[in-house]
Image (cartoon, rainbow, N blue to C red; front, top):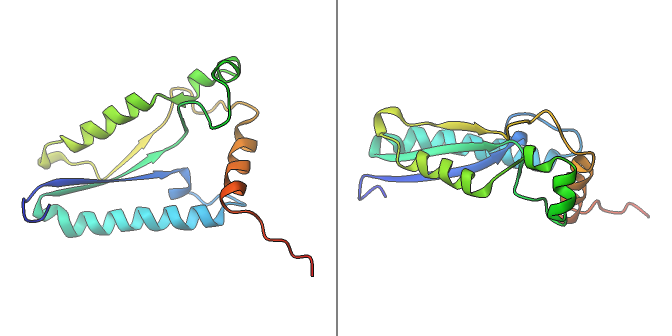
Length: 139
């Protein structure tokens, strides 16, 4: 990209990029670091024509893992989640921005982010537990 004098690097973050969340310290530390990396790379490479952006995705993209589409729609999920194609279009618009008006950070939310289906928190928690199981301290 540097040799061509153009290119785009987009990092995907989440709410944990901006705010600490109790019980999610591993996720928050990683996302805070990713945000910092994107800011450093932006300052380093934007003068060379490389657009570096950090996108905060504050919500669920598509139907949550393990949820049926019908159940998700019954819980009002269509108003709570983001369409993957719409998200891809947003990323594309970041890529084609004119260099005189580059975006460094963008927050994306569904149309009704204050509502969460009752199972949202438990699904998030179980997803994190599957990735990072809590070690047993039975000694």
